[in-house]
Image 1 (tube, rainbow, N blue to C red):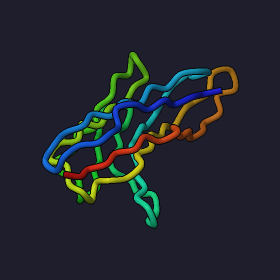
Image 2: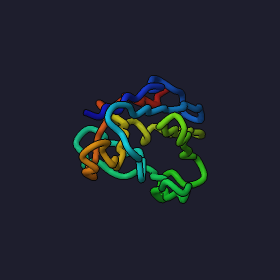
Image 3: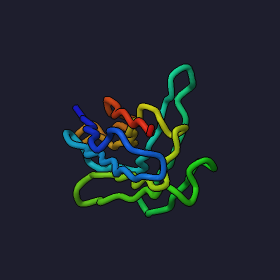
Image 4: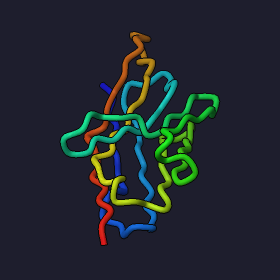
Length: 121
């Protein structure tokens, strides 16, 4: 089994910063891409940012220049540094990883449980 555990959410004021972390553990041979998605109340889940195993990044237009995704391959961990936060960034943030399972070598996507981010004064 593979688990993704997120941390770092919470309350921030507009213009403030938060840093999210997501650590993958379990039966992992290799992790390909990792990413962050978010879902606001009444809206569909959307991609925020993702990063390939080679370090190539991709961002939603709404967060470009404010958010930075990075990863530590040795720790199977992905981070999301969120600066200049806006109220519209309020959502549940989910980590996603494309994992090559150990032993079976199956390629599967896994999701974290989600972490709440609220931006409000």
